[in-house]
Image (cartoon, rainbow, N blue to C red):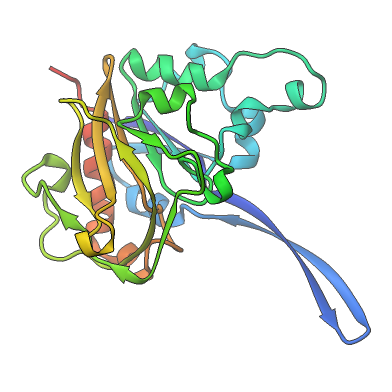
Length: 257
């Protein structure tokens, strides 16, 4: 059976100024960050809809019915402001439904919610992602710090897998390739919340993959990236890369008993 997944975020626009002696000129480039995931899910049971960050500002649904067609939502490297400040609010001071509360209600009714790490995930660089104390944070198995939560590991780390027997870890044998960073979060102290993988103790022991439930739904936090730069090229080329995401999405969209 096909399961529909909505990936929101993972895009950015970069502006550069080039100086050549007396002269200078500018350039603008557009980037998509989830191509490895898109490729990994091709031909699988998961039908991925990729909504880049600039489109999500206006196009992410304002009503619960707009999310009902999806089995899972992935929020990846997109800040809370992109949902809170659409043009109707930012430019025209008109009221609109709070889409963070919409995501929370959708999850509580049985949806599968995953937040993926990045510079604009959880609390993010300079605290600018601003997911702390939001309705979406309520649904996650972790809470956000009140400040810049990046943990940069330029030397790389190999995760400690704490639950190799869990279905999400099925088929992931041996050491994983290197990762280069995570967002630091706090694991909720609840019986339904479990940490499947973390950084080694000598590199902070921070959570990497945390699972939980919220109402009738399932939730997860993957605190590293979906692709480079926090995932090394070797991680994205690893056979386990696609298996990990398929396993995780399979768990998120499984019916709870």
